[in-house]
Length: 186
Image (spheres, one colour):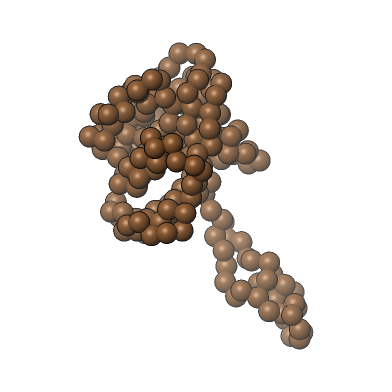
């Protein structure tokens, strides 16, 4: 969905008129995809999703946390809780909002991913239509297929870093750029 920035809309409304209302950014803005990702901890393990069931999946064969796209009107917390419940059957009882990750890609639309961890839940892990759910030792996770940028934010989670903003830019599946809190790190 394309949106026109406010300044551009004012310019369209004031065409032919003089003054500040006719000054604008002159560019269209794309609506950003909003999603959540949650890593559920059980001692020294993460509950991971091995994405092997969906065709044409950007995360195909990768091991990732749990989450998905916002529904209309949802907050990041509401989206995360709904997605975890839908994908696992678990009801989270304690979680932390850890950071926001901006994904930029030459293949997919830009995405703002709200990152969470959780360490308390009720229920039993069920089946997931998107892949195979498995408790994986944190020490073993690095050897599994995952996005390069995920390794950066997983390290930040393990280090218990304060809330952060991480920007990741991919060219194909290669991480071409990363910035943590505005400072380039890759």
